[in-house]
Length: 146
Image (tube, rainbow, N blue to C red; front, side, top):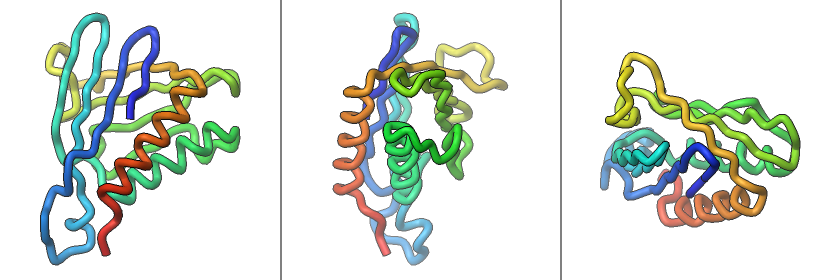
């Protein structure tokens, strides 16, 4: 999934389940994800267990609600506080998201690691719909495991 804007780019890619086999439902559904950010000529890549399968489902539902103009909430947060996404769109036809990167997701070049880094992206409607489809495809490869 890729979201872009005049200030930067954000990419999220599911790599694998964190555990190949775990007795706990919760542990079986943690995912290793790769985050790539690009901001003012600087790039950062992070690979970590930041999201679960059901959180990807939640993110997809939230993004789809924004596209359909029936926003579920102004932001989506996750169990791991290293990542969240806020919708700051003033108009329904122009998307503006603010992505919070903290903890292990903080770009290495960002100097104040005590505070989260906020990356603004503004995908056009076609890009946002494409990002949703891409993330759906990724989740199909790594579905919720019972």
